[in-house]
Structures are given as structure tokens and as C-alpha cells.
View 1 (cartoon, rainbow, N blue to C red):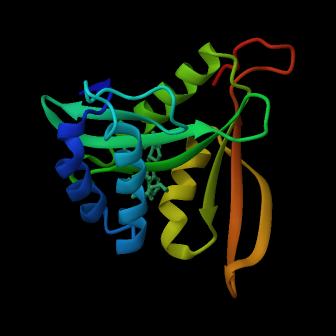
View 2 (cartoon, rainbow, N blue to C red):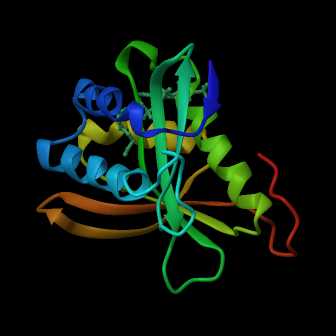
View 3 (cartoon, rainbow, N blue to C red):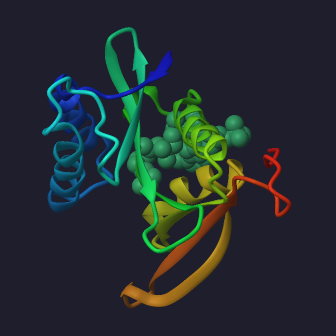
Length: 172
Ligand SMILES: CC(C)(COP(=O)(O)OP(=O)(O)OC[C@H]1O[C@@H](n2cnc3c(N)ncnc32)[C@H](O)[C@@H]1OP(=O)(O)O)[C@@H](O)C(=O)NCCC(=O)NCCS
């Protein structure tokens, strides 16, 4: 398995992967693909366009995309970033691909002075696996809005520090 950038040719496989997880509604898959198109569509080389607010990293088994993360700077903040999407092919789950992807994102952001990485999740039972994944990866609950998405479905903000308060790189 190796980590690398996504290219326009990975779109079909990305769509398949998002659906295969069973974790996302059709409209969420559409949003994830729209972000991919926004980032990759306008670039002649097919490589990430640094002028847009979303960045992507992929995990590949040979040529096959088996997972990806999408992240970007949180507007109007100093050094805070959002991890917008993270998905791993069900066949590859449990093998460290998700962990490798978040570590890649964290390392990239720490290298450019990022301070805080924020993930939004839900309190619903079917998100329990994802909450455990983030807890095991060093993310802690920073805020919760009760009944945000629906009654008994809270919005939870998880964060991890990318640098220590004095500017050093955080260790995990
Ligand atoms: C959540 C997700 C990204 C995890 O990726 P993964 O490659 O399976 O995770 P890893 O193998 O790197 O696991 C890292 C750690 O999290 C734990 N973990 C991962 N998924 C878990 C689950 N469903 N239940 C409990 N623990 C889990 C692993 O046991 C491992 O723990 P360790 O620290 O003891 O080694 C993946 O399951 C996924 O794509 N799910 C569907 C989409 C989703 O929920 N995305 C996140 C919200 S947008």
C-alpha cells in the first residue's frame, strides 16, 4: 500500500469506493464527488490545483485506489483545518489504511504550520466504528451540539493538535 495524490482518472473508482462503504447517502456521495471535480476538473495535468480549498490524498494497493481523505483550510482561522471526508474500501478496512491516511494529512499540515485538525461526526450508533477509529487515532471530543442533525442525533466535533502550543510538532 502506498499513499499518493489523486488524479482525474481515479474518479470512477472513488465513486465506487464511496458507494461500497455503505456509510454515505447518495446526496453525500454527490457532494464528495463534486468536491473532487472542483479540485481536479480545471487542471490540465489532472493534478491537484493549489488554488482551491480542498486537497485529496489516496491510498493505493498497486494501481487500485483503496481509500482517500479530503481536507482543507478552515476559512477565517489561523492554522485550523477540516478533515471533510475519509473513506476506506470495506475490503481494505481494519488493515491500517484509514490510520495511514489521517497520519499523512496530519504530517502534511504540521509541515506547513497547521495547528488544529477538526473532524465532524454524529452520535448515532452506526457512527460508533468511526468514532472509535478517531479516538484510537488521537482525536478528542471538543464540542457537541445535542439534537443537531435530528432528535437524539448530536453533532460532535473532534480535534487533534498538529503542533504543540509553543509551535513544536505534536507527538502521537
Ligand atoms: C472509519 C474508517 C475510515 C477506518 O478506516 P480503517 O482503515 O478501517 O481503520 P484502521 O485499520 O486504520 O484502524 C485504526 C484503528 O481504529 C480502529 N477501528 C477502525 N475501524 C473501527 C471500527 N469500525 N470499530 C472499532 N474500531 C475501529 C482499529 O481497530 C484500529 O485500532 P488500533 O489503534 O487498536 O490499531 C473506515 O472504516 C471507513 O471508511 N468507514 C466508512 C466511512 C466512514 O465512516 N468514514 C469516517 C467518517 S466521514
